[in-house]
Amino acid sequence: MAVCARLCGVGPARGCRRRGAAREQRRGNADSEPDTDTDPEEAGGGAVTEDDEAAERIEGGRPLPPSVEAGPAGRAPLSLLELPPELLVQIFGSLPGTDLPSLARVCTTFRRILRTDTIWRRRCREEYGVCENLRKLEITGVSCRDVYAKLLHRYRHILGLWQPDIGPYGGLLNVVVDGLFIIGWMYLPPHDPHVDDPMRFKPLFRIHLMERKCATVECMYGHKGPHNGHIQIVKKDEFSTKCNQTDHHRMSGGRQEEFRTWLREEWGRTLEDIFHEHMQELILMKFIYTSQYDNCLTYRRIYLPPSSPQDLIQPGLFKGTYGSHGLEIVMLSFHGKKAKGTKITGDPNIPAGQQTVEIDLAHPLQLPDIETLRDFSELSRMVLEVQEQVRREEQEREQRQEEQEHSQQAASQPASPLGGEGAEGEETAAGAEGTTQDKAPASQPFVLPTGVISRNEDYPRTCRVCFYGTGLIAGHGFTSPERTPGVFVLFDDDRFGFIWLELKSFSLYSRIKVSFQNAQAPSQEAFDEMLKNIQFLAT
Image (cartoon, rainbow, N blue to C red; front, side, top):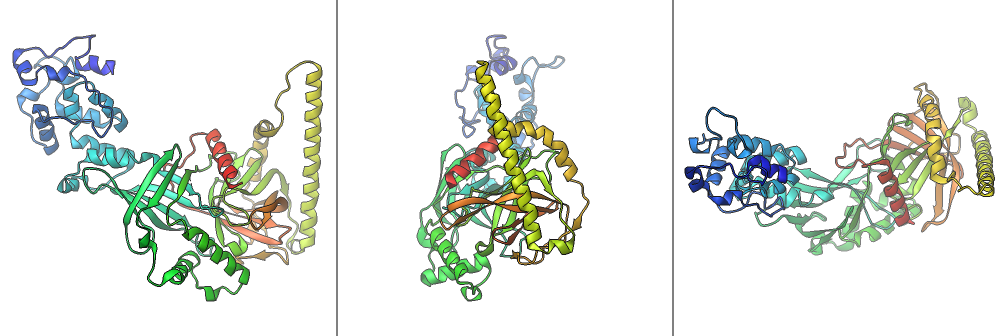
């Protein structure tokens, strides 16, 4: 602030350089008065002066009169105030919008220049990607500064990826700037079992500026068009939505019509097409549970996993098959010698937020020839041998840790944290070379063993590499959860599978190919904390 004041010639370091009776009569002492407003909404406000007229001429592309030109001829300007206003517009327009309120506090002239809509049009475009013809807003009396301050800046904290709190089912919400709207899109997996199909999405809410006063929030749930809604930012990385007209969600045919409509949208079929009684019960249960919220939900921020050159494949979001539960969304992330698949959407058995699979990258599996691989008992024998090996290694590691702790205590030295996350972190560098070698593109034939059930028979018939892993299974209501051995199968950069030995079933996963904005984790620590939080909430 002090630097800006000195540059413009109004600070104590240089004193006022706006000398001359004519200039003082035109501007007066008000130009040197600091402004205390810090809100982007107020940057550039105030009464209209000659500076406003100059700004309007800049906006309209009209030439400035000589009285507004900066500095006497023949010498360089000694302050920013001596620069032509059109040049100040270019300078201010290159600054982040969040810095402009502080700039407006320097002096009234700066505040008047910041009323120029060209500045805010540029900030809307560069910071939020608004490429619409913002000049059309003049018809409604809404300025680009209004759009920036009352819409984009005000709701910037809800942009990105979110997981709704819908019991065990979860979800994936992407909030984006779409033209002159902020829209919350709920992403849905394709219809079961077409795992390679693109994601589906539908709007849950939108925010836009209908008039100069404030932004309008509208609920988009139901089939009767937009209606009144409300958004509250509860705390950092959490917000809630509320529909104020839930009668718009009702259909004339009652709950039966609502259920049939939901079933066509969610599953792409009718209840008569589903012959499995247990599957019918699961579907009806999900409809009853999710429809009771009426789009009144709490959302918590989720991040996309950070990537590393040592990762087996690019981490990210995948859609996978889960038997009678249909397709679900899973986040694949890498943690040293481990890879984890965390559910973003879930079901009554394994809810959203739980770690559905864990891959041990330190224990690759060499598959037998095709004929031998068809024998489930042979594959099971191989996996159980590796499971026993992993168990012995864990026991040996725990024993070494105990011995070292005892020796350190005997020597009256503080024990070093060798277990848990620290040990895994030490293994990261050591496991990088092996993981990189495992990324070799050489493929081998693959077929599911006889007796293993797959929702999608159109799985790849070649794979790159396989690893030992564990999958989480549980009873209804997440009762008696346990990790059981399985096989992680990497097919290519965008598809992998998991064979659940105990269930004798196969899940196929396909990458979600959507470029999500404002979704990158600020650090590995922030991502790990996010995973811990959503798992804690699910438990």
